[in-house]
Amino acid sequence: MVTLTMDGRKIEAPEGATLLKAANSANIEIPQLCSNEELEHYGACRLCVVEITHKNRTRIVASCIYEVAEGLEVNTRSERVLNVRKLVIELLLARNPRHPSLLKIAEDLGVKKSRFEAEIKGCILCGQCIRTCREVVGVSAIGYEGRGINKRVATPFEESPPDCIACGSCHFVCPVDVIPMKEKDGVRNIWKTDFPLQKCESCGRYFAPVKQLEYFREQYNLPPEQFSKCTHCR
Amino acid sequence: MEPLNVYASRLITKEEYFAPGHRSCQGCAEALAVRLVAKVLGNNVVVCAATGCMEIVSSPLPFTNWRVPWLHVAFENTGATLSGAEAGFRVLIRKGRLADKKTVFLGMGGDGATADIGLQALSGAFERGHDFVYVCYDNEAYMNTGIQRSSSTPFGATTTTSPSGKAKPTGQVTWKKNMPKIAVAHNIPYVATACSSYPIDLMEKVKKAAAKKGPAYVHILSVCPTGWRIPPDRAIWIGRLAVETGVFPLYEVEDGKYKITQEVDELRPVQEYLKPQGRFRHLTPEMIETIQERVTQDYKKLKTMTGKFNTPDKV
Image (tube, each protein chain N blue to C red):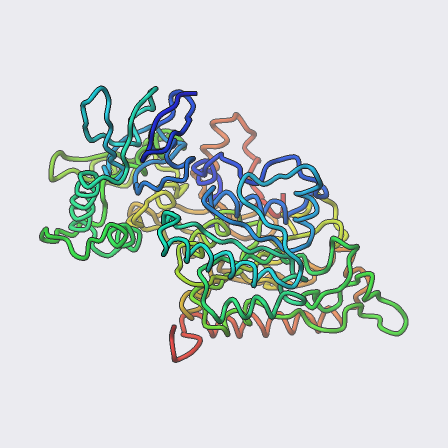
């Protein structure tokens, strides 16, 4: 355990924990959009910035990737921090001015309107979908395309993704809900591709994408008749 | 959200605030629901729990399962205690004695503490518009004291105080009280029904309820293997059947607007839900037909409500 000071309070955190995690367990609120405990630390949204003082030097760091250290002094609500957060949320609002989760953070920070001209893209490039696909699902069906202002999340060559198993995790994890997923008549549509769903042998209801079940069978060496029935009839 | 369960569940925090080692029965879906709700709300929460199963199993002196501040209150005053705690916090924040940390106030109780005994205090808290989340864990009878009927017990269920016998062969003779509808009638910003067989859906709803300003109500169907007379390993399966047969549809009412969150294309016959449960063992085909009619009718009614506003004077 290491001891550090956060907003004037002495708190303890396990070694290797990030400042964000230490703050959360001490009930200090830090807004963030791209961090998930189960994913690799990434530091994309920059909303979680805090000010740290170490040996008389003060600087701004992203708390979701900065690890705790003995004797560190952290300020999560200084004027400088709030100014950075305000700028960040204004930049994010220029990309997506409507999503409630962004609007809520903006409201908490006292930002009424973005100073930047809206250039609506929807996606805020937090990368959670890409990291989930790679680390949790393990297929890497989607990735970043382009650089700089043209950077965006896309499938390879803008075609239907060959590795996608239609599990819908990217749709679930997206903080601004810009990955549409629809299910109709035994077909799941995601990434502009139709994936057929498996019909249950005994009750005739659709229960999961065929490709996802194939992926399970392949991964765990299961017999081909496994998953021919839905969870209910099994 | 249910079809996403496989990988989506791996993205959920592993932190537990309702610790393992509690004393609930095997296969208790209510304990599962409590655990999921606690997980969503995190550690910045004050819990007021009415008397009931979840109070008994989680706080046998001198132990506790709660890793967050937790108050045990009587059956009838959960709503009142909750409003008091919330108002007290608000005053301290206004006076500058507490930092505004956006603490969530969670009230919880069983169906007895919500629909029967605690209803007036809860109704008052809804009406005054305190900022809290109330979660009702509905296991359809007073299970903690030994399966006595409550107003939430469904038609035809046998309990120790509504047994099926010669005089009253149906068991429970009244229909289940529609508690979510009562909550909707208070014009509160958020009302939802959930079931622990659909964990992702449940967690999304609780998250939404906590984010809303003002009172929010979540009604969770918690399958009780002991009281419903089913094997413990069937609890999740029965919960899923309750939704798929239309007995307990999952929907939410956001600012008065109805939305069915778990669409069922074709309802399964109610018989599939009733047959595996010992508490419905005595039902004759005619009685099942009566229940089927009522369920179909209620589901149709709910469908016509979706997309429409409950009241013209939207809150």
